[in-house]
Image (cartoon, rainbow, N blue to C red; front, top):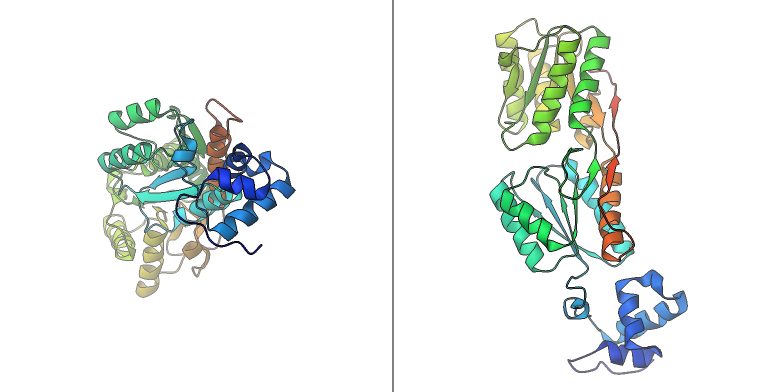
Length: 338
């Protein structure tokens, strides 16, 4: 096209003039590419690319008082289980030219509240939260923000707005049923500390309750809370065997913990599952590649991310209003460890 880069102060009006459309059409194309024809969209993008134009998302959306930024808050960026969900969110948002901002709250409601406050101040068009327990102040901020909020960590009965998830309690009960079917009666449970980890608490409750219904009791001494890491899993297994040497099976809530337990069994020469059976609460890549294969609960995390992002997109574009509740379910993947 041969035009020179223009000076600072580029506007949608200039882009529209060069593309042969109105500034309003440019704005519409940037906000919702599907709202204009492919030919018009191609012309607008060609002009934008040549000019090096970067639209002011805040100024361009003052009428709706929000941007095309979407915020995600997870408990930790070190945890591999969030990766698939994050990828699903990112892929869905990219299709509609929305942008993703990510932070971790370290399982702190106070830090989550501060992050929510900051994101709302930046006029994000939606917030996705993995946690389902929030401070009262955070709830007030979200209620007054007028934007979509999607929780993904559990199928909570009282969502802030929308929820896309599965029931951790039901997942725990399903693993309990698997242990009972396999004939195990002396069973333990190990996880990270449950304080501020509602998902683990719900999983443990579902597991313990499911076993109790079958006449199997998991005593408090065999409901361990340990530090993170493989050493935590190894220590959990050692403690269980010291406390109750005849324990037949353990459910770990955390792939790294389960891996540490498997390695500890191998170090001690304890056969799996003949010596002790091991299962995990999440079927991540680490668990999938252990030897022997570890029985685990599989969740559609990528799909959760895509669905959560789509709820935010539809709300931001005015195509949907009101809360959405989606139960994506789960499955128990049975492998050689049980």
